[in-house]
Image 1 (tube, helix red, strand yellow):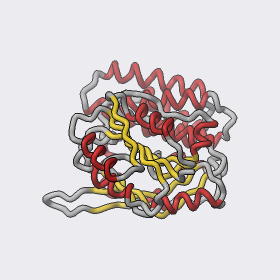
Image 2 (cartoon, helix red, strand yellow; image 1 turned 180 degrees about the horizontal axis):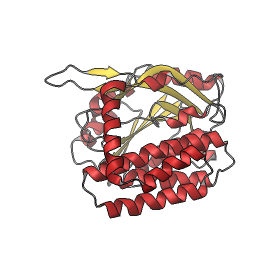
Image 3 (cartoon, helix red, strand yellow; image 1 turned 120 degrees about the vertical axis):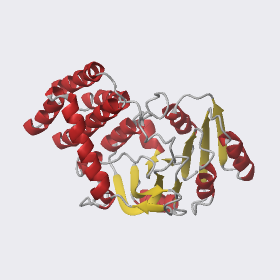
Image 4 (tube, helix red, strand yellow; image 1 turned 60 degrees about the vertical axis):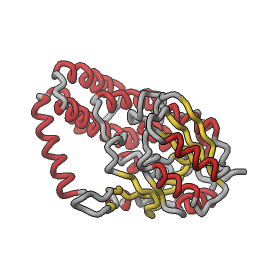
Length: 333
């Protein structure tokens, strides 16, 4: 049986794709399936994939019209033959021993998920050489047991989804019918996938060893959000899942709801920067906040935080959040 299927959803990444593919075909774990899904790229991405496929028989190429990151990943999951599945962003790269080491951890206890730390990678510029930063939170994940679930260690839910920094047991995904939301573009579809996998997995492990290099300087990256509605749409997707799994411990819900506060603030920040009329922002955000308060029990202080976003002027919220962002990126990163 193939140890691992690596799914690479690709769209217009010709500048970074060779580096990504080189690190995959050079993995110390050789028994892998590499599924490259070209999502209607208009640059040279497809020709690069085909070039590598001619050199390495482990590479399978799917060429389709543009339908988004989620649909591409779902095609990869459908075609995967490995015991485990990994997602690799085509503008990122990984340590050559990443998959071998994560699979070794997974196989020790037949785990559903193994997650690892990652570097934020910044390309060189005229003013500065390339460099990388290890996010502080990745070293603060210290569950008391090597194998755990989110009931035992829910803190992991509060941080970046980083779904690409890990491997997932294919049988676990299939049994729980876990798939990506098929929205246009990238559209934050990693968030619902992250919540579903982490909440439903019974055996998770985490290593503070950073194997993944998450590129920050690609101007076309999905992390460069420009549509303020996207976080709100993904929150609705996550709400649908959470409403059907209210048996989970209160602390799990609380941490996810705290994360929602950040998403709402980000949506307001993006909308105000783009001079979206307040009436439109309010119509989307207020309905969502009301829905969250109605459907989920939460501590009073957390409820007050949601209500403050509901009733404080958007301009005040925007300026306060702008200051907090400046402090974060100036002093805390």
